[in-house]
Image (tube, helix red, strand yellow):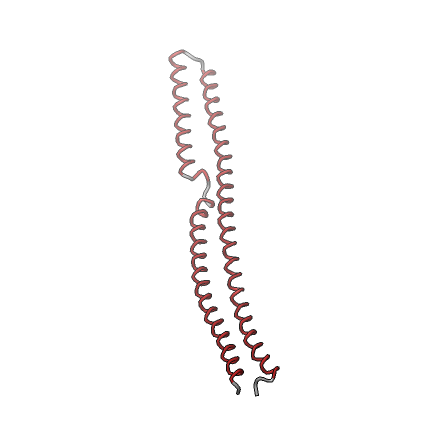
Length: 173
């Protein structure tokens, strides 16, 4: 073999070796990134899914508000009864006061139900945004993995092309 052929073989082998080394390093980095992405998905799930699967009325905010609302309703009914006793109000006026208080209570409950729907929709939207962002990062990682394989193939073909060119020119005898 002449020196040019030997040099081409060495260069082609070095190209392939460098490509394999780069692929291995890239693979390790991609695996680490995949682990981080999986951990982030777990964090997102643990942040949003428990609240998304919980009734709004069972949240601490809603239970606190409902408790306060119920206490105020009871207080207003007691005050109305006491006022009726002191002023000599009729049973009809006391009943009208109770109806007004319970109607106000029912309106507040309806508003809470609407807030619960908004709360759930907001959670779903935030969860979708977080997972969508993570999905974009995942796609970037897959593109990197694809590019690494493509680069290795390209480097191998380049090395083989160099060797084939040598033979075509008659350099290898």
